[in-house]
Image 1 (cartoon, rainbow, N blue to C red):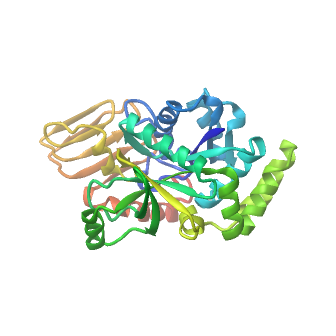
Image 2 (image 1 turned 45 degrees about the vertical axis):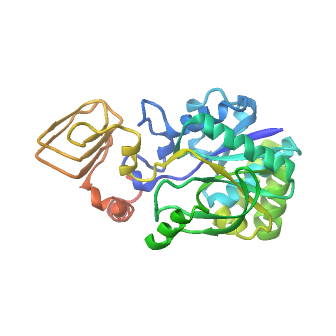
Length: 356
């Protein structure tokens, strides 16, 4: 049976001060009053019923996820006691699903992207599922057709053609320099690495056993524990000890048989504040406003964000990012947004975890 697993972990530090450990970016209601997690759910809900859609997230976020996605059964929500990167999230999700459905074919989806149009997305996902079903020994990744050279993304180099829109993976490349990114896009044989996958549960668990055996043993032990209380205790004891590593480094770059399915969609990674320009139309002066109340006077090319009905007014400023949260406000130059993570570190040095 097909299943969708939405990965909704992470704190989204670069979207501080709205995105915090206790209220991460995938749960912020910044886009037409909906969250990124809700949008991710609605995309996969076009293809699968709620009973076959699951979410893995931080345990502290489970109540918020349940409120955000009331359609999902409680047993379809998996809570990590702490984040151990995507390899362990994938492993735990696969082991839990395999315990319920040994024949499970799993689509892994992100919760921090905006993807349109949905019909093209659904078509590529269906192809990925079919490929994983037909090639039981293969892992399938979904590659985004790049619209520009971008050094913020990883790339997938396609190899031999399997069929229309399906290729063997020749190589994964982490964030390249600009010259290489330009060459990749011009050559037409590279995709952006979407972080979305399809595979049979048994296949990914077999790859995990080979390449990350300690994690494989732990997640299978956890999933096979029948009593809920014992399972939680084992999860708390074993999971935090696992090596923190991404699924790309741990498995995808080492697996012998990996296919890439072409996804020709508009794909926006909402990883930093300037990304919202791809979702929200700027006003006549280039100001992007993701807030209920805002007034600009002689101000241009600013980004203003607030989840509350709090008035933000600007006068005579240009090229700023202004983010209002109930207990903190960020003001910085647009060119400095890549330094927000460092700023959060400095704030923590002074105030501890109060604003993390």
